[in-house]
Length: 97
Image (cartoon, rainbow, N blue to C red):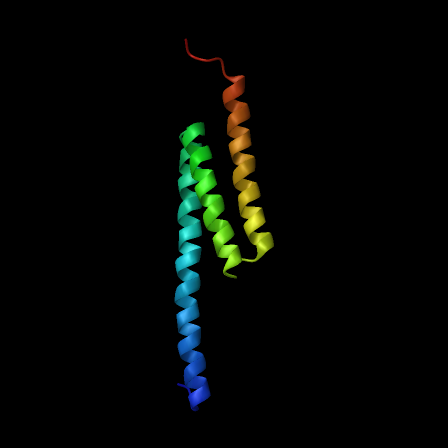
């Protein structure tokens, strides 16, 4: 329990920031999960479309200071690498016709 007015204000601000950060982090995680699900289903077209959306959300979170820029870059890089691996895998397989 805060003892001073400034401590009370810090508590309010801290709680507000915690909720704001949680909102953005949850949004980032949700978008990443969507991309990974599309990759798991071997749906390259959907994965690429969702990757663009996820990249946008990650960049917004970085811009708002929720994620460090290196963390955002790492998340995007890992997703891009997985999409490229899927693209290579699908290119190796003969088309069913």
